[in-house]
Image (cartoon, rainbow, N blue to C red; front, top):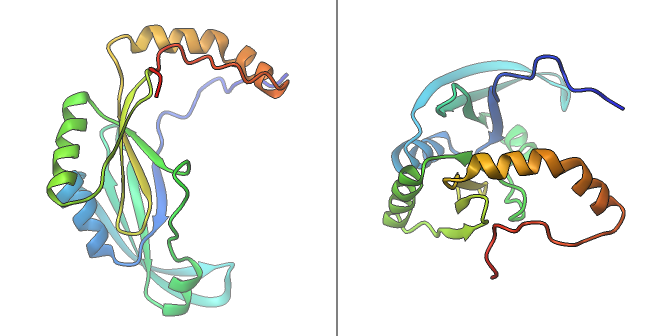
Length: 181
């Protein structure tokens, strides 16, 4: 049996993605969603995908409340940009940010005001809205319910057994918090 670390990572430092246009990305994340741009690094470096070649890129960071960030690369050279081009992912491949219910509603208003489609979902253990950024990255904003501590405690006590059951082929739903759709 494996053991968990004696000291878990303290937070997610950043998630990095590729964008086609840093200003368009800044407008979405800062002006619309409301995450502040806190760093822009303009750099040159090596990539194993382009051996012996120096590539130029801008790397931006948008702050989230725990000190972490969403980060985006844009490449100067067209062939490098084409190699790392952001591609729209399927719905189940997405980034999820925890927010308060008030912030969730504010972001929903901001997105709607910009005519950006918003999908809403009550998962029972959280309420979420989903929207796509300019490069097709699906972003989820999720708010916990008042009984989140109860839900978390129950999941922590059943997570391993539920996983074993799933792996054995038992597909019985265990989300007693979600309404029927």
